[in-house]
Amino acid sequence: MKPASGKAKGRKLQQWVVDYLHECFPSLEEGDIKSTAMGQNGEDIQLSPAARKKIPYSIECKSRDSIAIYGWLTQAKTNCPKGSEPILVVKQNHSKPLVVIDAEAFFSLVAE
Image (cartoon, rainbow, N blue to C red):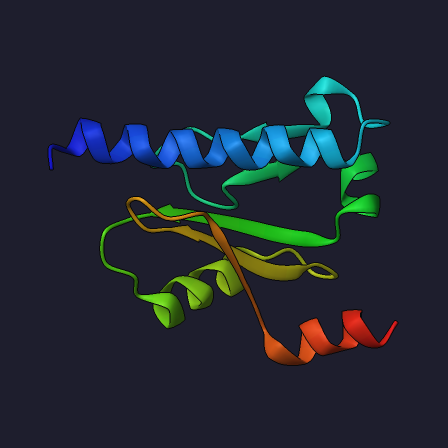
């Protein structure tokens, strides 16, 4: 795959996440949830302070053929601001996107 095609797949997944979050949180303004440019350091999905209150997660997106979950989750943890929970959104070709979250964090959410 050409680098441009890979970046386009990544952009498409990031935009899907942004659009889906806007559907889930219609009270947030258009600029509260944004996709970052490809190759930029930090979180893949930027959240305004208002959005961070409703979505206390740091979102890393990867759209690949092969999946290296633990390395990517480590990257999400590295980019995660204090007070947020890192999550990873992954997508394999011809499959639905998945969200990866630390098991303890997930079970804490379920317990609430």
